[in-house]
Length: 426
Image (cartoon, rainbow, N blue to C red; front, side):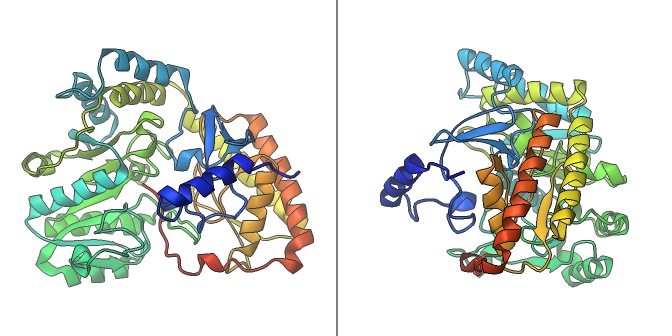
């Protein structure tokens, strides 16, 4: 079915005149199939509507912030109530203390919390805190891992300086020997080890954390006095009600949070243990909107739903149903579809598809059938999704696999992806 996109095209043309490139970041036209909408009108539950009125089951969940559904009535009511009292004030409200207490009680490694606006804020604050605590410079982190868009970690470093990225040593995720070599290279200058909760680099298969790797990271930090940091901005609350590495019994010194912390309202956090408390109190980090009260009210209601509902068990069950159903339909159509990562944060990649021509075609065909998926970035499930939504996605996939099979011999390469590096969004 042909999709109408006249309003979207009109907005793109207007954007070209007043926005460099017409779009930037993760919604850049270089990153998605050409027929994907750039502009959206609204969201409700698990669905979004583009500016031309087309409705989609949204498997991206706004790249992660949607955990309990767009326009969730309980969360948004808390947000609106606080707006009526005050939001951006000269200082924070009591909600900041209440939210810090709530998160400290929920996250096993945490003794304190600090709040900011997005994931890049939180990861940069974590690095600053680690350097203040150790009085050292060097950070060890995994190749291809995404920790934000600040100059020290941005995946496409155009416009940054080599000095912005100095004092960093890269290792291979889940490779104990590589990690040990990087720490040895850092010597007595190691400030911290940064780790993603699982390998969720773009364009490549995801991987669960290896227990030996995680334990060794903890041991090396204990031996050297460095801090272990888990960047849970993307995965936080989708794998566990605690820090994601709590599932494997490894606790960090610092963890960074964002995305769905307030179910789409702008808020992120740095949590830490008492070891790092003095350093956290010594650094200067702030922003005009970091103390906003309404997002904190939304976060408190989000935490209430995290604690009192079976959201995690339900999205896990839905994710497993989606994974099993896609495997069955892909096989029936003659395709080898690799599904990697946690079922709540799936990634789909085709075998024998080095330039993603199959992935782009499949994604466009899914879009035509009312399901918004991504050809190379991990996706997300939310608690507003239902069994019927998963069934709709599987029916769409069956049709999309059929369409892909018919087009496979004539698919063209996707040359616009050639210059891209691995990355993600904050």
